[in-house]
Amino acid sequence: MNWLNKLERKFGKYAIRNLPLYIALCYGIGAILNLASGGELYYTYLSLNPYWILHGQPWRIVSFVIATPETNIIFLVFMLLFYYSLGESLVHVWGVFRFNMYVLVGILGTIAAAFLVYLVKPSPYIYMDTYYLNMSIFLAYAAIFPEMRVYLYAIIPVKVKWLALIYGALLVYEFVIGDIGMKISIVVSLLNFVLFFLSSRDFAKISPKEVKRRRDFRKKAATPVQPNGAKPYRHRCCVCNRTELDDPQLEFRYCSKCNGSYEYCNDHLFTHTHIK
Picture (cartoon, rainbow, N blue to C red):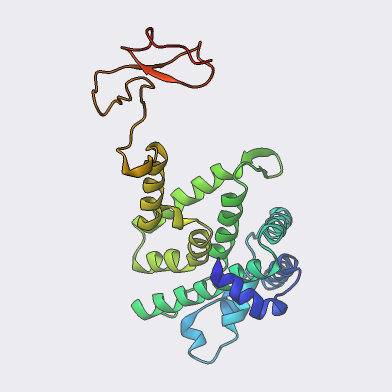
């Protein structure tokens, strides 16, 4: 991730510490507001709606991040703890700045997706929340810790890789059956996962230059280099100096009675004088 290394050296000091905790707090505030307003306040005044942003409500660009991932108060507690633990794990692996960048790119992708959908299908009823942002955080965790187990409803143990596959299949299904707006939302909102995943892969090893270098190295290692420009060979008789290049039918063996590694063709294996 050379581009991230450069950004971290330049802007790392501005990274938000304890960001997973702040995310969980935002979801908690959103849940409290929902309970206090009967679920109407968020979508009426706070959700990401391009139409209302362009008609005098610019705070929606930021306020949408408090969308709670669960409306049931019991399950909400587990969800907040769950996403907090995912965020903390990613911070330990990536570092504070990289996790900040991942979340930031996810938020910007969600905003971009909402406005792209609005450009394609202008409507005052286009809403975006943190669903795909939460999904991208989970997918990043599953890509790094595929064998870890989570407990559904605090009871059923499931490896995160299987949940990630289910979520991935669900996203593909939604992309296939969804309209253009759904397709845009899925692709753009998950750009942070795609970007970070591709950035962490080592594609240099499959580049044409690297493939040629490895092929040339194997060829050179498999072919002994001979002095004075002689033809390369693998076997040479110590008596007649013939090699497999002189006669492909020749067979060569090492003599166990000679003091050293001396090789002979089948014509001289039993007739040579042993070297002591």
